[in-house]
Amino acid sequence: MVGGLCLIGCLTTGARVDAAEPAPEWRSLFDGRQLGQWKPTPFGGEGEVSITEDGLLRVARGADLSGVTWQGEFPSQDFEIALEARRIDGSDFFCGLTFPVGEDHCSLILGGWGGGVIGLSCIDGDDAANNATMQIVSFEDRRWYAVRVRVTPERISCFLDDEQIVDLPLDGRRISVRDEVIPSQPLGIATYATTADLRNIRWRPLPPAGP
Image (cartoon, rainbow, N blue to C red):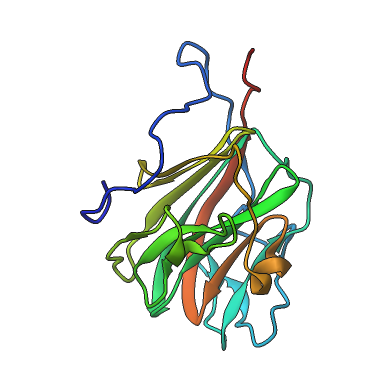
């Protein structure tokens, strides 16, 4: 349960990694010193992307969307990606994490539609405000939130501060992103008219499921 509301219409099973096996090691995607293979996303009207003195990746508020897109290699399934994000100012989403799902892509939105909506965009053509993954959460400015997404051929699982907020089986589902977020593909982090800080961006592979 997050923000007093339970996820509607999603299952609560589907962990992939055998608890008896050691978890794969996390691999950093941001060292706190340079952007590396992250590049500012050319949305049009975007805010500046910079690294702060204390090693944070800051996405400044733009007219609408601002963010960064990963230019390096990244898997399309059987992975987890994690980061910490906080909203500095603004009233919309401070983390729109776009990630591959096999041959498709999807976005986890945190704080959209006026600051409180979370969910996946898009599921069967419906964005995060209009599908079964939608929840309302009261986010605090300048507070860090831990975000983690797990993608396997069978499902998308999402966690906020280690609490599961999405467990979506993929069988029979159509996965996509909103048109304006296409520049974030295949892997990107965006904000909407909001300044946000990001840190501890990392990923790890997951072992494929057995028969």
